[in-house]
Length: 143
Image 1 (tube, rainbow, N blue to C red):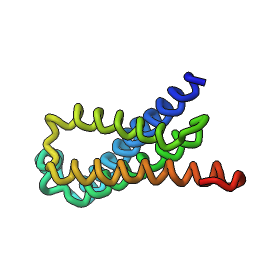
Image 2 (cartoon, rainbow, N blue to C red; image 1 turned 180 degrees about the vertical axis):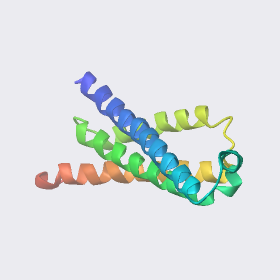
Image 3 (cartoon, rainbow, N blue to C red; image 1 turned 135 degrees about the vertical axis):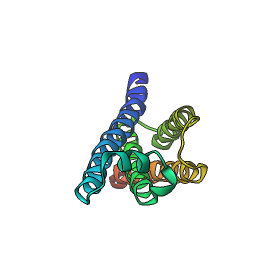
């Protein structure tokens, strides 16, 4: 039974981190392709990408995609948990918070974006877990 608990949280972590990273790579690639097709040369493109303050639209898209994967990870974690689904999702959120703090120490993205991403991502993971728990126990009559 202990392995199922760890497996649920690790699967949620993998879904969140791998999904967010893969989606970010695709989005940034498409974004840079669009800018290049509009006539921006490589020098201008590198200059623009090095200044996060000028990338509000891209940052909002990336935060939204990250929040989606946080919610999906919460849903999957709760779905795979043998019981106490929300505790598993809470463990997921704590681990993701630690990872978020560790990797964003040297980030050039503004503090506001990081805080919004963390807050919305945590809420999405908990909401995804609650939704999964509700569906899982729907037939049992308990919430």
